[in-house]
Image 1 (cartoon, rainbow, N blue to C red):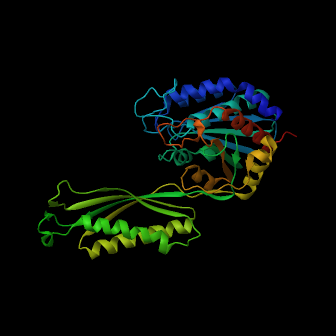
Image 2 (image 1 turned 120 degrees about the horizontal axis):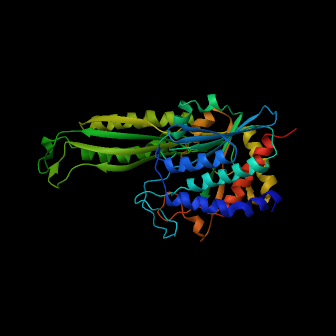
Image 3 (image 1 turned 135 degrees about the vertical axis):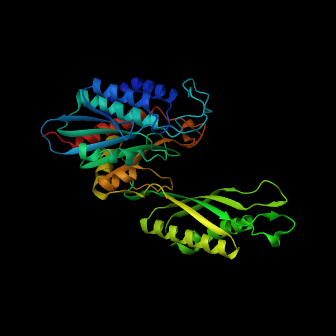
Length: 392
């Protein structure tokens, strides 16, 4: 264990307490008022220049030291999820239907622990921008912050973020160059037919039969229209139609999720899904309207910044605890939009594997962030800052 990691481990109880306090008081997207105020107050007390209200509840803490011209951005997310917690922990959510089921409480605590250390002992020369983002969970808080002038007000030469990952060994650092997390798009399809009596289907145009055929046909988009070497997903997550067994309804609705790890594949999926739905609907004599909603972009880590992030990881914890090129993941992350504006890299820290409590997957009522990662996460941010903004 490096001296820096050992020191951040000694300091971690304060931030474990802070993390658990945030966990008790989870807040949904764009409603992170308590968390935002806590973050802003801490940063101000440590000497950061603090800007509040970017993207609604976003916070940026800036610390300028020395005469270095480089500018670094580190980002953490703050929002919780609309899930009823089932952990039974003494610091479990006090708000019914809301919990930190993705570890954003831990991400915030790690960056705050690093912020305190860098303010008090950081050896760097340049500009450090700490970005605490709202509404990562589907709200597009990254875009909202950028719309409010994030990178115009706080220019960055590179930007980095970290997410915990259950199923990976505790404290392991996992990096990846290139496409790392998938795009996410969503479609609501409304099929309009002619309702009628279930005993006389020839006098109706049945949207349920059309919906069933569309669901099955969509399974061929990935298997027959996309390169087998490219990751893509088309999932019909919901069908709503009818209320009685002897009534053919006039409408049916499908909810579809579409993901890809390549921008061209993403475009191809949209073309084929729309064309297939339209053709299938016409073949059954029903009309289809498609509400296509673009979600998050493909998250692409840039080469130089990922190489730099790998070097920091190796220096901090050694090669036995670093995966240099981890697997791509089908989940989505709106840090992707920041990476479209600024070069950078998004990495993972293992939350625990096997039978450990940290292995419970995110977005699960039983999930909890592994507090032992606050030390390694904060130490990583400190070392990355000092190496990127080298004094002298």
